[in-house]
Length: 129
Image (tube, rainbow, N blue to C red; front, side, top):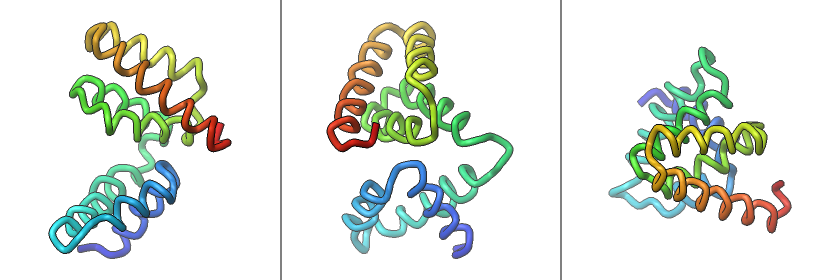
């Protein structure tokens, strides 16, 4: 394992998803699943998200489209929150969700808007918006 890359990955993961989420994911891991958390931090977040060829806003938009297309709505919610934290505006997010509905199908768009509303409401309740 490249410890420096893992550490950079965890740092960007915390920036995008927040300390509470990352602490929960890492804290709830056990001897069986902890290596997977290390893999996520090193490769997903370290190799991909720290590559400056794309900015964080662009990466967030890409993830929203891919996660909606794959019907991974739990992760969609996690990354919708990250997209807001990465500075995407309501107008940009709405446009992305409409495009998701057109290209992935209306049911995917309905679910994406449903998850987006829940995340926005949660963030408003916590004073994060």
